[in-house]
Length: 103
Image 1 (cartoon, rainbow, N blue to C red):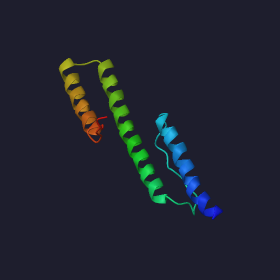
Image 2: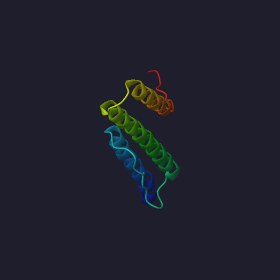
Image 3: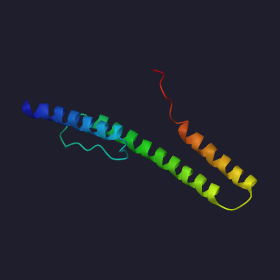
Image 4: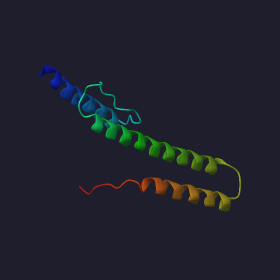
């Protein structure tokens, strides 16, 4: 009975710690459980969400950096504006994956 409690309580503790890390802005890592722990499917889903979110944030960061390079560069303003518009469309496409629930 004690082992069963640890196999359930351990993952719950780990999930709490992972969610605390995510809430503080640290993302992109895997949720690791012990071999005989319960809730491995939930851990896999949380890992998938965490890595997917990290991928989207990296894409938005890269878009932001490219826009800053374009703004700082020499060249035709019209051409720069078109490049920025394309990058903005990419960012909107990345953001469209998410929806925010009304509270």
